[in-house]
Amino acid sequence: MSIFEILAEQRIADAIRRGELDNLPGAGRPLVFDDELFLSGEQRMINRVLKNAGFTPPEVRLRKELADLREALARHPDDERRELLQRELNMVLLRLGALRRH
Image (cartoon, rainbow, N blue to C red; front, side, top):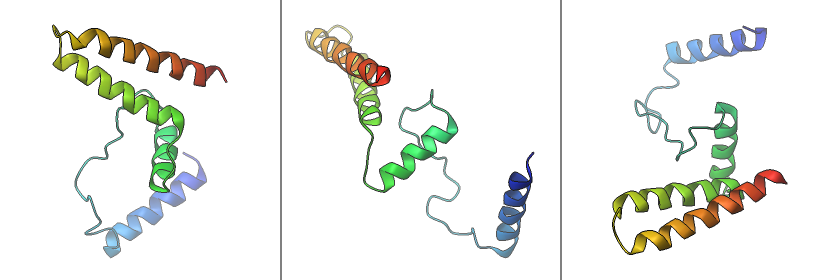
């Protein structure tokens, strides 16, 4: 553990003892990262800060669209809509791949 991590942990522990972190919004509930399971913790936090500032990177928007399409496909396993949803999903995957190459 680096000196910065040790200092950060000490300051957090002191703030907890003083009660400064009591009654925060969302206390006791897990953080939700909107289907970003395969991103590093640092990248998820960066995305969250950007989102809270009103900016959503294109990759994050595409990942959200991808998650929504996968959920829709799961709801319509044998529907005539499935083919259209699959095409949309493939287009989003192509756009996401193009972003990563740049």
